Length: 186
Image (cartoon, rainbow, N blue to C red; front, side, top):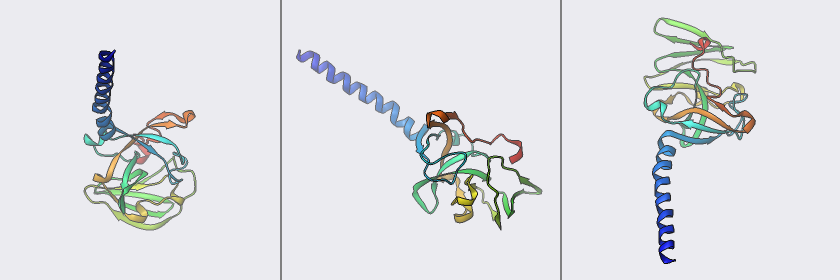
């Protein structure tokens, strides 16, 4: 009987070590849970939704326009925010009443954003992005604290992009709200 209990304890310890070896690196470097808090991303994401964040992709490539990212809030890095990438490094973003115009080099274009539902009226403003800076905005622009308030987000503060919406179960989706391949944004 004593031999059986030693074997059971050894199996439990082995299982715990294997679990730690597999789960901890995945949780730390590959995927992280995130719960949406607030209404700044309505209607794309709602308060209380449970998301899985892909933390691996941005080790191999930079964020793209139209992706929804989770990042450390520049004014308090202990807090995490979720917003959509609208401006990329080296671009100049101009806000004028109801439009966003992007300029890079000699090219200039006005983006159309189909995920926005409410009429938006921007204050005239120009933001120039540095080499590793991104302009991020909430989809609920009228109620969003975003780059218009506190400026660009440094690439090093971006944790990852939304990979999966898990809860509510009726809304499970892979890459929900991702418009990175949409022609109207580029």
